[in-house]
Image 1 (cartoon, rainbow, N blue to C red):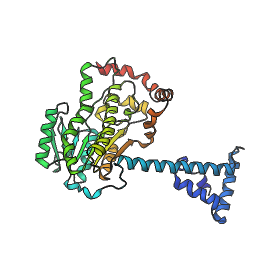
Image 2 (cartoon, one colour):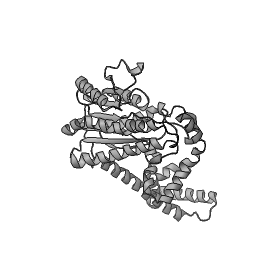
Image 3 (tube, helix red, strand yellow):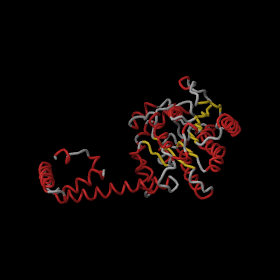
Length: 363
């Protein structure tokens, strides 16, 4: 009994814990309720805080149960809305060894890990990149490399035509290619602005224009866009990167609207991915800084696993990785003074040593 009352604090937010405990304390059979209440009173006595009483603990459990149930309902409604207002996934539309996926930037980082996992599902994966595939995946029969410079619409069109000629129209598009680097706005090279926006967001428009029409015609497809937690909070030193990722968020929000209201094709799915810091070539040169200021870096395979799990679920959605950061998505709905306080707290301290690194990297 005592172990139940001293359970980890995380369980207090779980209705499957607070619900049965509350029921046992208030309406359970005497053989269960009596010993539980006795243990609770002993626990309260041991704490020695006079304001904590058994009735107040029971009231607190009721509040925690209501909050926990509210979060569950909220998550369910979010999943419903982001899946084009459909509760059920149309799994019968998808046969994985017949599907073709396009992954930009699939020769390294999150893209490469995603390519590996999709191939294991039997999906034919077309990797669009300017660097060759690593040797570890060059001999996979269902993975093919197509040279593509995503800063060039002509290169994208040529690669898209080659994919269709080789394997037919893709049903999955993963806009993963991206670049970034530490520098302040003042130190940012002029040419870099066009480059980062073209790769990180403009290319998404070009690739969607290439592959979405066939998805619309078949009322089947899945478009995945790699954004970032920087979509919600723009840290100093990577404001350009954060701006491109906020644009990816707006693109996918608008894409949802067009899928439902212009094309009326709810079978075309849309997922946006918001990872926090990941150990990829994108953060090359300032891993140590991020390890110290951000509490560690995630592995690319963790992000890839979430992406592929979402695709295989046959549902659209929004992935916040790690999920504990989901509250950041509500930041822009807060009062401005609250927003600025949160931003200062979240990134202000970490910025103290960042500008020197940023200036060196920009030169």
